[in-house]
Length: 112
Length: 112
Image (tube, rainbow over all chains, first blue to last red; front, top):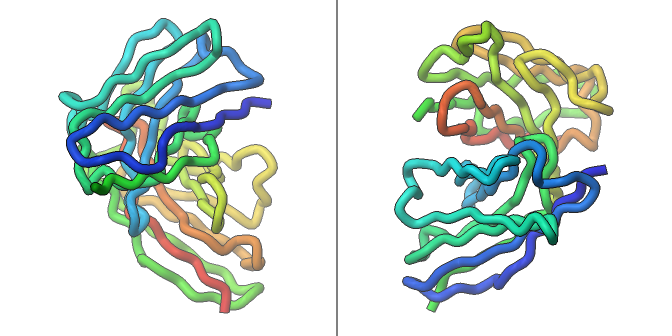
């Protein structure tokens, strides 16, 4: 069974970088597509981007200048980095394999 | 981006009643392969989103047949027959036909 687990700090200061890790068990990240999706307070959901089985990436144009998704295949993990965060980046962040398998989510608050 | 307009924003229903949720897209969701990549998800309280229906009308694994999806082109409907207590939560439509993936604004289902 595929399982995903997010980890990372729950509080980030404005202008700093948000960094999250997604640890995957039960499936190799060298297959399929692995992405990040966030849910803002009030239910709005936003797809942020993905890293593919080959390591290629695709990002939501709304974030393209601030986002980076990378991976460590030896640990079966992939990572999210979002730069220059503002309070508007406060959200629950999910890692997912397509929209079928989701992590439990990690709430990240951007505040000084 | 494809805008997904979901209505109503909230519903309150009694156990055993049937309900429908509408999702309309700003562009046709028929992909070049002829398939329509419109999906429905449910986020139950305290849980990660779960995919209920994929490609308009296909039930996900383990999803009861009380759930059904219909529609074509730009107009889609999720129907829940004989609502049960476990159905409460926020329902989302999502499209993966066009880049980037986009979600509807959500419909919150409450049980009377």
